Amino acid sequence: MATTPTPDTESTTPPTHKPLARSVVLVGLMGAGKSCVGRSLADILGVTFVDSDLEIEKAAGCGVTDIFDVYGEPAFRDCERRVLRRILNDAPSVIATGGGAFMDGETRDAIKALSTSVWLKADPEILYKRTKRSTHRPLLQTEDPLRTLKKLAEVRYPVYAEADITIETGDEGLEATVRAVTARLETAATFADT
Ligand code: S3P
Image (cartoon, rainbow, N blue to C red; front, side, top):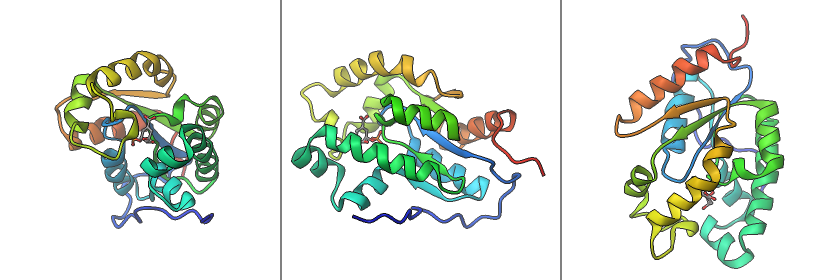
């Protein structure tokens, strides 16, 4: 099991903002754009980008689908909890979480205590359009993935709403979403006073 945190992307751009005082954690359903938005945001903020699913895969030595198939969802959630606790205690970064991470009470408490959380909110129809060709999301390997997304939204959206910041996303494109997140972070207690 790998234990050393390894950022997925080292930022190459000089930061245009004050240093981050705490991590920024992106939450939301599958297809919300957490990884794409996270990578771009990390670059702008001059910090590393960490994808919690990739960290879980490194720790487990196999892909998310295999973890679900071989060990089951509870084992995945357990690993997710431990990996996120480690990442959150590391230097401030931008962290994209898997869609179920914020649903775990312990992980949610840690995210609330140690980071600024951002929910990328989108309609299930939009999420369906973005995920319909994906084969690496075990929860969407159902007969009717749109219905699955709608059901997940019903259960999860009231919990995601506990995030510090909510950004509504639609068809506006990556840059506009990143701009919206950055603007909201300016008014949250995210940056160090210099
Ligand atoms: C999950 C979302 C996935 C991944 C796993 C479970 C979920 O991540 O963590 O398949 O419970 O919503 P993405 O949200 O990045 O697709």
